[in-house]
Image 1: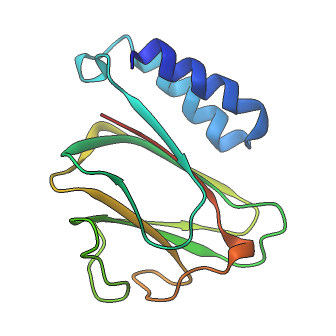
Image 2: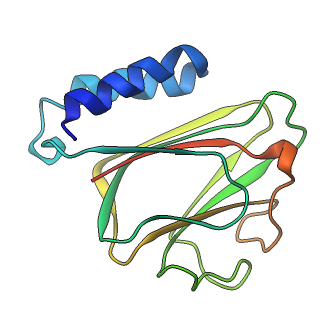
Image 3: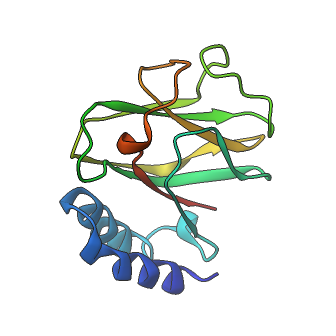
Length: 149
């Protein structure tokens, strides 16, 4: 998928998201044409999961992560991202490659200028504590948008 199509899809998603997501899309649209590492092939993945999930099975670089807490969320949760093969993650035991705290009713957006490399596979989970082993409750499950290549 070309970057034009990916950025267009993100712009279509903007009206439904909070300011943190919108700021990230604006930044990405400005940077995409400036730097070689944003050559075509950015992929957008959107999910709303609290259980462990696997995003992509090939090596990948993550350029942006935006996590939006749902309306009605009552607790802080943590996004844990793992550089691990499908099915090999044990929550509370496997060390995450990246963690992000998401407060109730907030959006957190993080951009990686050079990309965050995952050599094996991108797996994730949303838990009640940093490096924790307990999945977040269904009412606290955020929407996760990841841009990778």
